[in-house]
Amino acid sequence: MAQHIQALLVPFHLYDELLTEVEVLRARVRDLETVLQCSPTAQVVVSLDGTFLLLNQAVVTILKADTLTQLIGTSSLDLVLPEDRERAGAQFAAFAQGNPPPRMEYRARRFDGQIVTVAITGSLCTYAGQPAIVVTIDDVSDHVETLTALHEMERRFQAMVEQFPQGSVALLDTNLRFLMVNEKLLRMMGLTKETMLGLLLNELLTTEEHTTIEPYFRRALAGEAVEYMQAFRGSFYLMNILPDYDKHGVVTSVLVLGRDITEQKRIERHYTIRASIMKLC
Image (cartoon, rainbow, N blue to C red; front, side, top):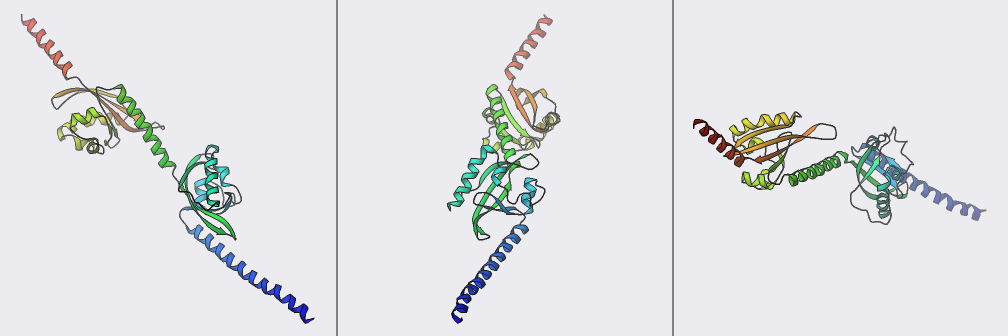
């Protein structure tokens, strides 16, 4: 009988150790949950195949989900656009192999149907006794949209420069700060690109010049395509200032085209004087 009792004591002892390990594990899970819920940034714990295990309210906000439970147990890869899904899957595979990749960006479809660009960084962790990944999600949609708009602006500017090889070309923002300039304008002003870019219009001109020219720029910022002739530092220029719109129809910059018509004005003046003399005769 004593031998049978002794045999039963060993399993009970192991059971106590198991209970202790379970309590420790639960405490670690609670600690991780607390850290995530208190974090102001969007953080989520996913399995090695990308399944949502734990997340905070900031993730729900980014993805426009209704509740936390709407995401738990679903695959994060299902939210990634098909054309980016292979790269995202490769990132999870790299984590599983112990080679966390650097920050990467993906396009995902939110629950409201809109597309958002998110930047993902993460590190391996243990959750509920299993290997997992704790991921930080940053919504970089505005940044990406700004870069896209800038690249488009540069493309249009370059196209305009190519169509206007003999003229001065510049692009200014709504504060009348120079964003882009061509070589002819740089030579005319005697400046380098590094010096001129970032200058405000009133920093480039004298007070008198700025007082004369600024109203034309303000009209362009109001949406008017402006054309005028300007005497500037001993030369005459035919100026065009055109409003540049974003996809929402808002003026975000103005394109300035200047053509030197000094020789043309000289010839016109010559013929005007000659005609006056002929009348006197």
